[in-house]
Length: 234
Image (cartoon, rainbow, N blue to C red; front, side, top):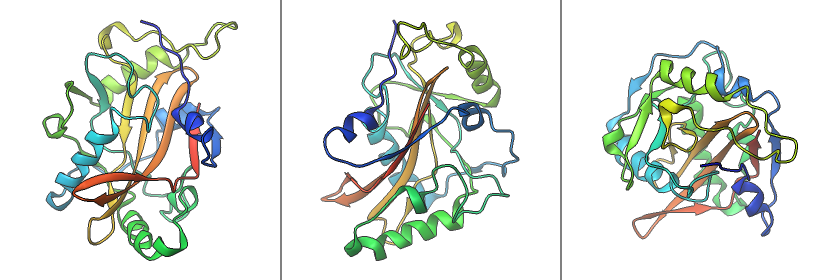
């Protein structure tokens, strides 16, 4: 099955939200960064339930490309993404949330707690557990070796000139998947009523999308807030 790469962020932009786009012509750096990283840790218990609720809500939705295309399982990196230790949390990274997200004036105090949580933990990587996701399809987690195999098969793909948004075919080893997904840790305010995470999807060649999502807990459900002002597409 052949998919096309059309960003959901662009669709949202058409209905009134204003975005600054980072076009990742050097997307290989986002996917295959060799920068040293901290050893991954088990996800802390006080983050676990809310984090997996948020991940499970975002995967099949419209917050990232290909959320609703046909697939047999979700293909996902087996640990959360993080800034390398030599990167400053307040200013580092192509889509630092201090710049990418703008809370309204009345909510800036709440959101400052979320940013403080990010600043305290932006270098921390957490191991993911496929059994903790609440989604209809199975989740297949990729370790470093499997992730590199996926990327090596799709990274060099160039679409035909008459269909430049065409995504590369899925490698045989990963048939049934539709892109490789990733998350950062989820960062919270102290009351765990406001949260943010970055979701990403890479499908190869010029096909990929990464963006922050901000959510608020209302009536026992996480609801997405329109505060994000930057998205990265390749």
